[in-house]
Image (cartoon, rainbow over all chains, first blue to last red; front, side, top):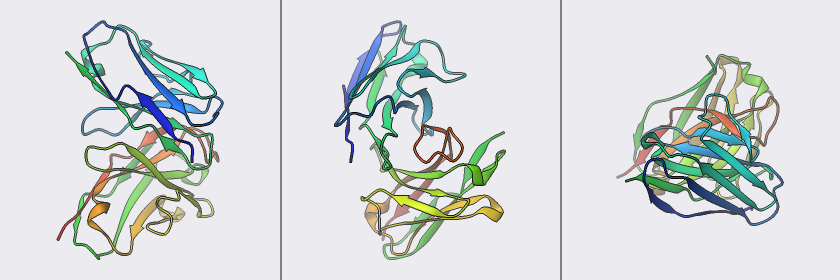
Length: 107
Length: 122
């Protein structure tokens, strides 16, 4: 099973700040890494597909990068509505796996 | 509108059986795999398994193989997740999810159901 490890687990940030969340895979997964946002009592929402590809309707302040084993989700100029938990997800192997999540709190 | 609509919350006792559902609409149901994802209270997302509704072929995560059964009825565009004997540790929110691409088992999930909360308590 491919293990995804996110860091940090929790981050408290102020509006307009730039945020970086990392996701490290236990083995190379190419670009088969996706990012989701989950707000309390809501279903996850796809933010970025295949490491860096944007999703229609998602604000441009969200971007992704990386390949192989190391990936990054960047949120430029954080807004209050970005308070949520963020998950990475790999689809390289038949058994998909998720990272443990990173909770963003807005100060 | 493409959507997945799940059945309502369930409260069950340990040892009872249960089947929850996920109905697809607004797209060709047999053209996309359906996955199930568990989220225990206050915890992260766990991929459980998937089904190809066109032929009911399934893949399971080793963590869930033998504990749950995934099935589908393509005639009514509905996928199911079922337990034969629930445990308290099955208490969780369960989501169904559809991948981006047609006939692609491994892919990002762009459509999610609203979730079904299952509570197992004596």
